[in-house]
Image (cartoon, rainbow, N blue to C red; front, side, top):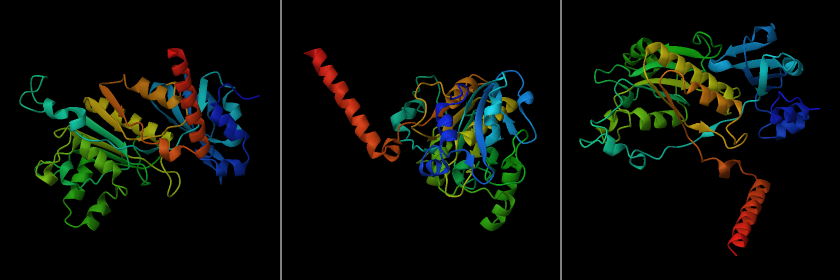
Length: 336
């Protein structure tokens, strides 16, 4: 009998054969075959300590959520603890692309005739970007004196010195980034802060959200061009892979904690996403984002809608077309 505290997809993954997991796009996400461990998202109440042991690694997040690394043989045992409410496996994330300033009606807000009384350019606001990283040397993310507008950069892919409370990656401060920017050669710069945006997606997204336009003479200015910036480069558990919701949740958690500590309002952009799993708003990642968006002065912006063609198999396409056809026929019959 399937455990009610485990997500249905996780129950399926645990029952699947190794070959079925390997061939699936979703059943192996979060599973490390060499160590036979799972990275899992947990919702709990009270204290988590009673459910932990030396073999279970935990990162406790805000709002009663946690990321656990658990031996496969111990997953069922976790559900015996009353403080564990629900356990969910992570999901892979994919890029979603923003379309620009004009479609979002930004230009009128920043004109001399702003309906809000004065032009708004993000001064005093912290813009967060949890994505593929950032080209921190880009002129759009630097002040007029050449110093960085980036207050914190957490690269989850660089082992070394993670932020307090987390166990992956390395955190870089504005002072370290400024020191790197003072180095004339890029090789010297990356010896100080070796974080790179290899795909360019995070840099592009952040340029839309907060670029100053200095590189284009003000032509391609972002929305919050006078804001301060915090960046998380999401880690990938495997080479050539995509990040998962476990890394995403930790990135969101980090940005919100930092904004509260700095006493700044946070506008957080998430342009990674996926189109499978829950569509009800009740999955743990959805519940987590809903929960933490009420902390501090936080607005979370999530990209949606670009994944259907890429993720849809021929069987799923056929099924969806049948559903659309029956809905169409039902509507016609009602009108008749």
